[in-house]
Length: 171
Image (tube, rainbow, N blue to C red; front, side, top):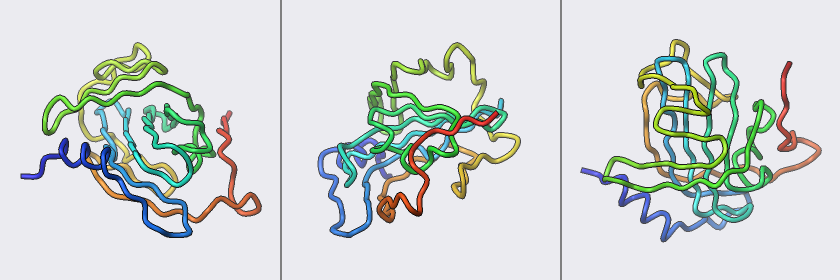
């Protein structure tokens, strides 16, 4: 049986970027962890990236579809770079991942505060599919927690063609 902890620790120690002209990142993440209440959490950990130091990003979607990110890197060098226009907020946060078993991790961050399934004082409820599958742009979030490893290639940022990493708050 595959040991996700061992794969993640190996990526942390040995992540190699492809030699390509596109922006690239290599790592792992929990593609989505849905709660029956409609909340969704997700995690992205990229120990190697061509746009800066490695980073960790925690995503949160509220039941009404509002996305926010907490990450330990500047928005231009993390997930906000690619999804910022769809967010209502982003936070710079210290984020730590501790693997507590072969299939279990403990995540801590200082802003916003996350404890068990409580985020900023709100209990997210039991795990379970959300009433309407979540998505962020063209990225559909799974209806159950999935850990994935791999990499991403993205064309380099071009200010004439792409939206900057600013978070756009909608009314």
